Length: 190
Image 1 (cartoon, helix red, strand yellow):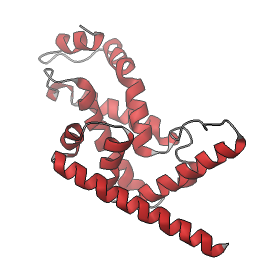
Image 2 (tube, helix red, strand yellow; image 1 turned 90 degrees about the vertical axis):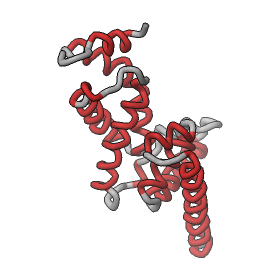
Image 3 (tube, helix red, strand yellow; image 1 turned 180 degrees about the vertical axis):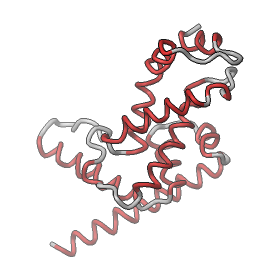
């Protein structure tokens, strides 16, 4: 039995979570939560805020948590709702140039050119993602980038696995169209 399961078992009924037990819960799931929030947001500067707000909301809704289910997807669902509110607030103010430096991964060859190319690709990806509707964006990020099973994405986004596949296809088409249009406009400038 994991430490987290022991915490869950200990807090049935009206008992509230103590500071130490909340810290233990946070430590158990923080790395995955922060990574997933970073992928969803694309901006490192807001990851802490969204992840912390997720944990605050998880604590506030602790009594509604079904302890027979895994806690990771429950926390991910809360994070997704917090991220949705963030997206609504910052939809038009996003600075895509700062995004995905970390999530884009290290350059393959380690050269300055490869690093620049990686940053440019990351910037282009998040610019393209900003053009998607929230449903397409979150479905694409959870299914393709996070590689969650379609059934899990369907549960998190309150839809069906078939709708998840459709949204991913639509998102890919829209992303390709955006990249193609950018590529064409840059060729015209040359």
